[in-house]
Amino acid sequence: MNNSMGSQLISNVFKALGHPIRIQIIKLLKNGELCVCDILPNLDSEQSNTSQHLAVLKNQSIVESRKEGSKVMYSIKYKEVYEMIDYAETIILRQIEDTKASLLNK
Image (cartoon, rainbow, N blue to C red; front, side, top):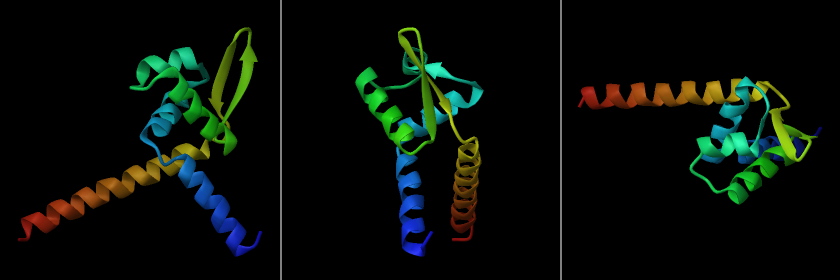
């Protein structure tokens, strides 16, 4: 994979993760697969909007789906996505610590 193509593919994954509702969906799926009907009550989002967010995550192979009767069940395809979220949370905590230290030194 050349440098430009690799950078674009990485950027696409981060774009897919770049919405608070998508992060919430990923966190909800940490304990196993869910249908939209189970995801929806935990979000401040309409069903159509939630389905669009799931489609974005599915298009980047972050989630996968399967039919179970009339329901579509969603699950995380690559568990490494949780490491990415953990790293982001670590960066945020460090930023908060830096800001606190900066304010105390003024």
